[in-house]
Amino acid sequence: MKVVTPDAAITCDAALVAAFSVLGKRWNGLLLAALAGGSASFSELRRSLGGISDTVLSERLSELTHCELISRTVDDGPPVAVRYELTDRGLALMPALNELIAWSRENLAQPEVR
Image 1 (cartoon, rainbow, N blue to C red):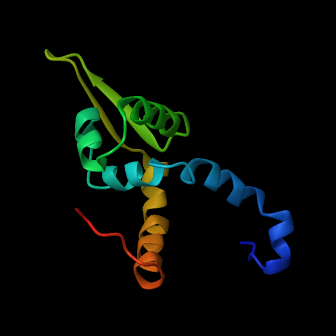
Image 2 (image 1 turned 60 degrees about the vertical axis):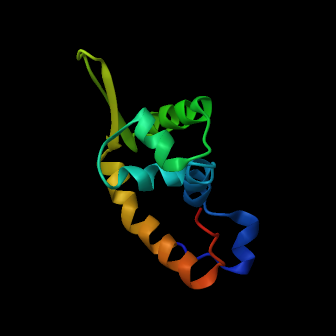
Image 3 (image 1 turned 120 degrees about the vertical axis):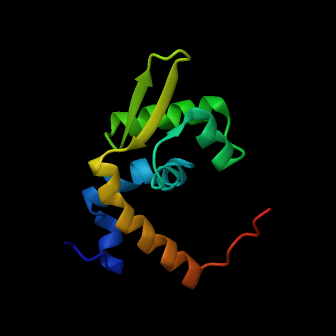
């Protein structure tokens, strides 16, 4: 593991760039965290995030599926149902997200929950 130092900011680790190209997009980390509790439908995810548009949610789910962090399963029904869940890659990211949550609670002002 490469340690990031002030001098390293000029030549940032390519792996960190790759991670933040996915996790740095608004909603992606929250979607992954929402799926940590188990599979969910599109509408369940939309309700849990509050404020995300259907278009953006669809784009983010497609991107996370493409990165193989989540999987999409279609149940022919009736009615037809689509569910999303974390893959093994997505599950492997959960310890890092939990550490980020802990760091945030200790070091950042927390927004009010409405």
